[in-house]
Image 1: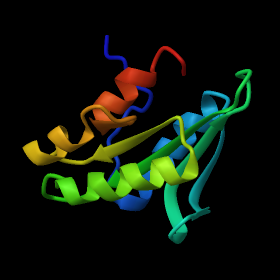
Image 2 (image 1 turned 90 degrees about the vertical axis):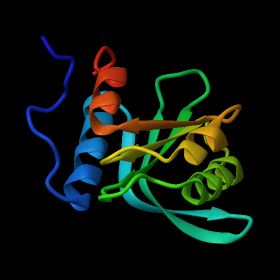
Image 3 (image 1 turned 135 degrees about the vertical axis):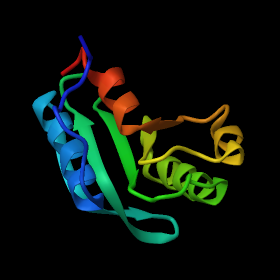
Length: 129
């Protein structure tokens, strides 16, 4: 038996964002798509901004969804980890359609940014869902 939240894969970038947002909503988070947040560098749009208000200190999770036909490179991870830090997120997740370049994996080490494909995202959050 597979630990999947959804019975199908997303068909485009919008559906990927929608499915990630839906998963967080179903887990009891307050969650928003295409959410604007202020940082020291100005406002940025976050694909999915989820907050677990049930914890003593609300847990803030940022998700960057990449429905690309190529692996995500390290420049995306550099930028996203800066945003996570500026916003004060507890952690961030970059969800990729086809994976990550080796430099991206090295760039996230010792940070609060996690790299997953959609299957891994579902497996990681299945028990909470």
